[in-house]
Image (cartoon, rainbow, N blue to C red):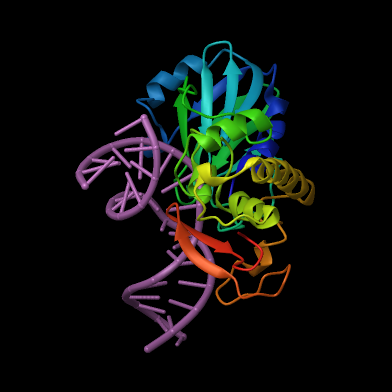
Length: 258
DNA sequence: CTCGACTCCTGTTAGC
DNA sequence: TGCTAACAGGAGTCGA
């Protein structure tokens, strides 16, 4: 699913639109418009041009001369820009691109469209979204800040990592892969980590994201092949635990994750 | 305030 | 073969 890794690929693709004039807005699905945004309100974008792109966690921001447009992809949202498909394979989503799954599009002068295809409609589009409640991006957070935030949370580690207000960009697959690599039990209270464990979490969060980015997506982790019922830990062969933590299916190794 | 439970969306897949 | 029900998770809301 689109986590930080996929959204960063989307952002790089969206960078093609910088400097191009917005000729049309296509918003056929009112459900997809969030935060009071309407198709009428989106018309203010027409005539302006894109000045830059940003990403905070899983939120992609298109800065334009008229307003900032926030794009969210939920679990099955894909971005197509000028005919390019940044992420070919999206875990848990269909490989096909059906016209009825087009939830939003921008038409550009001298460039193809920017299109959001989202079968399950869990993503959304919002004008000038509030970003003040998002935590630091998972790739940018410092060890000092991570440690401080861990110490302030009694939530299970897994829930801590999934909470976009604490750390932005981590979804279910990055969370499980990171904790598996770090050897930390997803059910551990966040504030129970000592300094060394905090360091491990910080290091493996960055390394896991970097490695999976290089491989091409959040589904390319070493744990991922074992994210099925009854599978064994790829590291030590122990039967993996399958639990619901933080409201999400969580796989972990009872032997090396403590 | 913090945290967990619940809800929404719908294509895919497992199972009868 | 054809159908149903479970499942997937990002994000917001609500209540203890």
